[in-house]
Image (cartoon, rainbow, N blue to C red; front, top):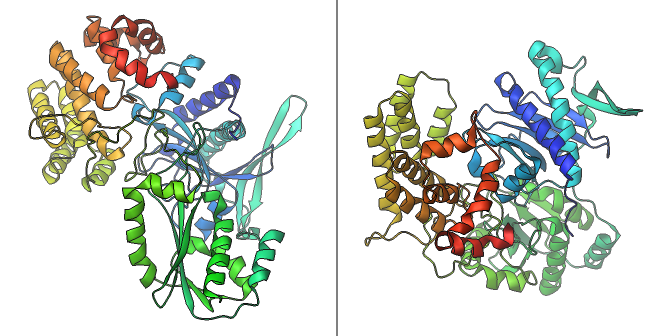
Length: 568
């Protein structure tokens, strides 16, 4: 069942609150350790709030429930590190560049008649759940995030004028915004939440769970079993439009080397999957283990009530000798033939297109809502670049131009095939009117990019998808080269590059189709910018203009129209 989507008015309220929050820029004076809470008027649930921005990832993170706070109190990783699929659930209002938006975002913005500037960060609103792809907000989430953004603005303003605003009058308390219903809506006030009384909660056994375990209770106890679980790196989608998830693999072994039956489940069915496999393996072995060894802390919450009920010792160890070797083979088998494996384990699953979520999943493909057949096509996926972390840290610092240019040149020498460094350096040189030097830097990066993506016969890949985060710096420098050529009225080479970018990435997160249409309609780059870029914002009429004109060029867009018509 699909969640109910927000209404147009609810989207308007949410985007308005998000843009007000962005305009305030509270990350200039707040750190992600400056936490506060907002209580959901509809449910009473507490949302723990963090202002993110010290690493140049500007956002408000809202973490419903107590799990996030408990992880902080226990010294676990910061909740802003969303690359971990086991992180607490979160509603995130991020402010990112155009590349992180997708068709759903563009259509919403179009319906709301909001202006869009591709040069400025824009709200990207997503729901995060452990084991699931970051996804669009449902109605309840949108309503709560709207209220939280509005209350966060109040808290952040007060904190700016009084940094002691979040310091509680007594130990163990956290500022919370609570509301009460009045005649004309909700009346909000400050209060203090006693966080010391919050207790860690795990899985709870229901009557059917207890019945399964009681059937096993009289079995003899013998030996030590190893248990592990992990997410597969490729998400799947059971039904078009539903939230995609990462299949959860559970593996079992006896410490003497015997591999027991494992399974694959949905993230929200972990407990039942563990119980079913424990029952199956127990009857297969005709005994329960005396001890179960695990190496991941996240398994404690699901296994502790099970082992406590059966009086089995649960031990945390540094490594699982038997399973670690077996898991490497398991992942290799699954990724070589994912559909065969998953169809056997999870009824019938179709791999669908998935909207591009957040950059944190850098090693995982983040596909778009467009699902293109690619089994017989040559796809380019770039390697990881360690220097990228240095680059993003550098761009988040306040440095003088001379020092920044020097650091960028150093990064280029360190890794000549990481192209965002070239782009930033060339843009700085263009701003200084050093056009010849800027062109040399851009051309150098562009030529290296073409060299790594093409074959010895200079053939482009069939697929160069934005969905792979590690591809984005490659696409960006080719895009910048195409725009540079267009700006110099070198329309043929510019058109050639835009066409190749669109053909190899039909979901077109970068808007190559707009530039192709503009060139075909004999517009210069300056004319294009003058028509659609209003005071730094791309006017929403760009989408209407494209829709009104692209069918005039069937030779250009017929193939693209057929490939994408289902999603537009």
